[in-house]
Amino acid sequence: MSNGVSFDFTGTSVLVTGGTSGIGHATAAAFAKAGATVTVTGTRTSATDYETDLVGMQFRQLEMRDADAVDALASSLGTLDILVNNAGANFPDGLDEWSPEGFAASLAMNVEGAQRLTVRCHDALASSTMAGGASVVNMISMMSFRATTIVPGYSSSKAALLALTRNLALHWVNDGIRVNAVAPGLIDTPMTAPMKPFAEMLDGELAKQAMRRMGTPEEVAAAVLFLSSEASSFTTGTALAVDGGYLAL
Image (cartoon, rainbow, N blue to C red):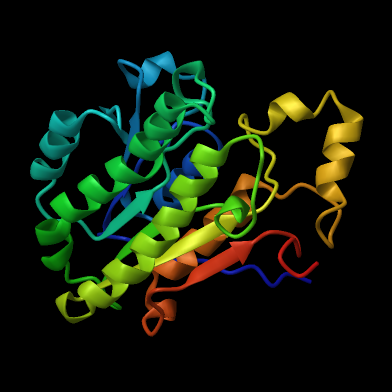
């Protein structure tokens, strides 16, 4: 028995920041498979610098903390139907996020760049004729809802991105642009790979959720595609948790 859902994004243009690995790459690949024209960003010089398969996607180098680069990318887009703000990282530049410098760097990387890019893309998104309206999907985190003593800058930036999601949804509701967020739980990606060799650490994290397993990037990507589709045309300003029951415990 199969109950899979398929989406058709033929003729749409999609921008996925940080689309070269993990959740971002799975999301970009899912959009491309559904017929969309997909642009991904990454910090390296070219698509060939990545091990992931970026064939069929347009690649743009982008450092989210480079305001001029963000502005240049936004101004080059023309019409844009879907923006996925996925780029982000913890411990920026290897800094301790409890230090003022590390905290500020995390905010700049994970929320300020996304805010700047999104606002700069307003006109491109507003010109979309996609059924259900143009869509912005922000990638947040379980740390948007619960505290952490390890990466407080990352946690604060993701909480801020959730607040930005709700504010933009209200601000742009009459512009034909929906703004939502996806909140992944513990997902099997390069970001979480360092904990795998440490069974006690991994088991401790898995014990915090009902399903007791790591999610896959593809499971998160499916939520992004749903929130970007006509099927969610009455949905804006919300955060969809893909967390294996983390928030339920």
